[in-house]
Length: 201
Image (cartoon, rainbow, N blue to C red):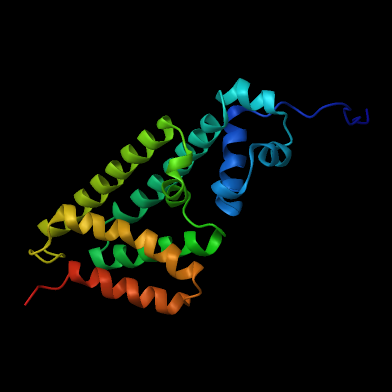
């Protein structure tokens, strides 16, 4: 029997599906540059669906951010929780930061949210603070492990080193968006993080 294509409205999108699609739109077009009306148009849903699934626009943004952080954290752990030498891991991490800046027109979604935090709700601000603390902790434990293996300078304080690594994300985005070449961006990053593995005079 020949299959007949069903007519009518497509299958209802799930909350997870909407969050993922919204995350991609925000990454590419920018949190501050797209209205709720426009994102509804691109998601092909009516506003009541946003309110029903997420409560309000902040709820949609928060859900997209949580999904983004989950994906970022998974990738970070894939890089730093290996048996590779710290320097190799660090180079892979730099490549990851560069890839984010090159792949998305507006760069890292977390940094986008931090830039416009004054326009976002309390729920999102608290999530951003919590996420930053978690990322710092991930990098701090990574550096502590490298210290034990003597792959990092003993002069490095893990917490300070963690913030240095985290700052590379912001630098990448600023450098690439301002027109700096990938090669020069990588060189500046390498020079910056070299302090982690070189002893101070």
